[in-house]
Image (cartoon, rainbow, N blue to C red; front, side, top):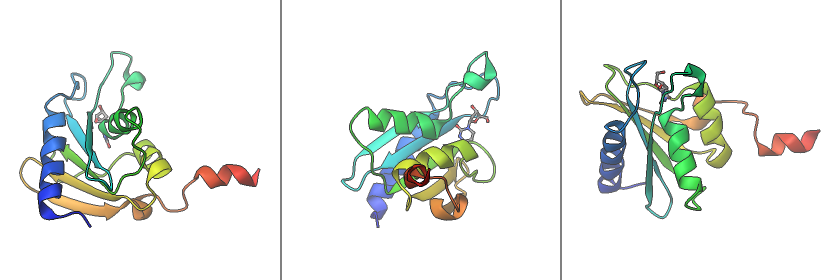
Length: 136
Ligand code: THU
């Protein structure tokens, strides 16, 4: 389990990423920060587009930023928003997070200090996973 100092740094990274969110259409800014078992932190923010479906969520932006650094194993993700209640990752992000870290801890935080935590396995039970492809 990550220590309190590391988790505080992860929260700070998620909020810092949220400041860079490009969300002119939804106005819903999101930052996400992934933690590796070695203590590395990689962040991402949502990046929207005038062609709405081309937009990307913060969690998937963070995954892309981590994978390009050679990081594919994560213990925690913190999702930061300005919502009043903590929001869980969308379904597509759950699937993308699941690819790399089935036992991920998902923590959602708000500016007002509200916080929620789930296991990804509870957010996405019966997942389609890499081994599912071998059953064909
Ligand atoms: N969004 C995320 O970045 N992560 C989520 O888990 C939920 C939604 C973004 C997508 C879009 O830019 C905005 O929030 C509103 O849906």
